[in-house]
Length: 85
Image (cartoon, rainbow, N blue to C red; front, side, top):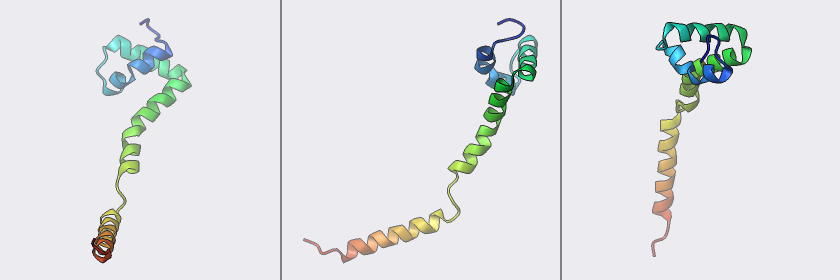
């Protein structure tokens, strides 16, 4: 990788850059690239926002336990009304 890395190089090492685990020279090259390249800067912003977004999207809704309990009760009631053969 040269002093000013390509977009591919930046995106390959962006996690390490965000964690601060790259050597100074490589970090500096990526920092400069990010100041000059909007696409890679957006990629970094998206990557940093991903954990919080995933928590919000994947979190169960607050009413989930009650809704699940109601659904289970309805299934159990339907099964108990079903004629047995």
